[in-house]
Length: 184
Image 1 (cartoon, rainbow, N blue to C red):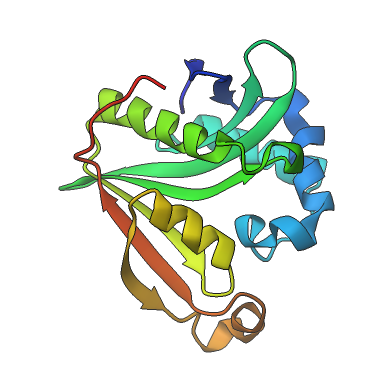
Image 2 (image 1 turned 45 degrees about the vertical axis):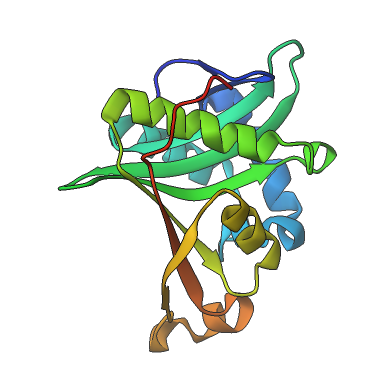
């Protein structure tokens, strides 16, 4: 959906491509660490990956991007989500994953802010939503530091007992996008 390269201070951000499989698969190979960003699907196959790319290119509102260092060919992370063009234009972030070597160095914040700025300029989004498992304390703290506030909590329902046992309830956070656009 992005269809162009976005540049931040340290990274370039672009749509997912076929040659990104090994990088994406590395997160799935470390499922115990990244499970809150990945969700209940514990395995990435080439077939599933190709389906993600097809979905990314055929649905104009979906995006799945990788970020790499500008000055080196080193992957940093991913961000995926979608945009809803209803009464209020909404950006929904499904997940952000940063390689362990680059955690706690500001890359997740830079990636997030770059995507928000892109969609604010291109589509004039008004709200940003994310969901966080109640067991994902690190994720909740990160999003709260980005200015998100709790919106509501939802249960998985009767059919998702195993999901509830592993991930717990899900809290929806939101943030108004009436932020100043920064040069990152």
